[in-house]
Image (cartoon, rainbow, N blue to C red; front, side, top):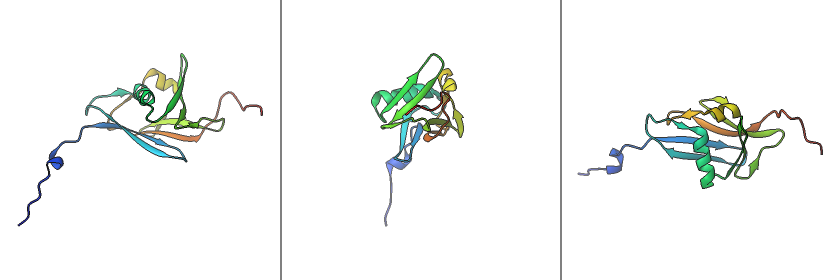
Length: 124
């Protein structure tokens, strides 16, 4: 007769907010502990990850907008940049500055993809 008992199977997993970073060079998931019904400011969470350098991130911040400029050495260019999505909806820098609240149930992706720049192309 054989019995199987696992104490870890009975433990409830603590809710986490998951942030997924996606580029052609890497894919990385970060888990941040959170209360089940607790919402947190996405920009604050990203700043905390940046402060820990996990992953290494750089932002540009103005009175009106926030923009992720670099993640793990992959920098924005005139053609590509880091774009934030929450539940499939693209977030712009103005929304980020005003505050985007996220919960463990939200899907958060930060993707390096083709973008259009407002200021035109650089002169070589």
